[in-house]
Image (cartoon, rainbow, N blue to C red; front, side, top):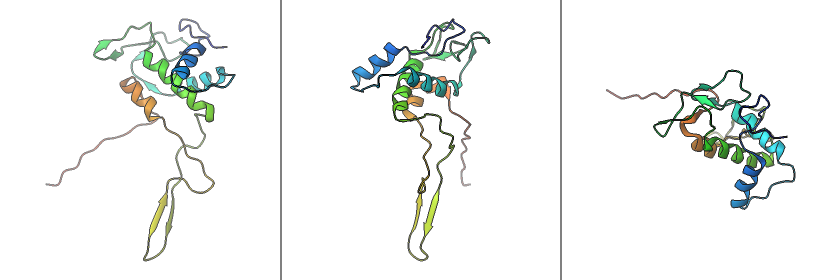
Amino acid sequence: MINTDITSPDANSYASEEDLASFAAIRGIELPDKITPLLIKAMDYLEGLDWVGSKADPRQALAWPRVNVVLDEHDFPPDEVPRQVITAQCMLAVEAIDGDLLSSVREAAVKTERVEGAVTMTYAVADGEVFTPSYPAVMALLGDLAGGRGYAINAFAERA
């Protein structure tokens, strides 16, 4: 059962079944009969993200609501969930129709074939291996609200 009451200790979703049905309907996406597992899978993915700010209450069940969040240069209310987060959960729920969002494979394997003196070909996914999906549209929607899993370092080099 989906519980979207963020003040409840049993909250387990930001998006309701109605939110997902509406999201899918206006996009012409056909949903399966059971949509609760899709929302829960999407929620599992979202809960693994590195969110800005801090939980509004350290005992709350989910990552949101949060304090110290600035959205579009305005302080976001510490008792609400941003619409972007709810939409992101619906987007991920649709992705979950085709399978698990949290694969145990962490990176795509690289396979290289080289024919000496001719051509070298590299494949991101080798035969029989799986590709770990990423969701750039979800991350773009969330923008500065969430970071990914892990970290990145940007560096610039200039020739003197």
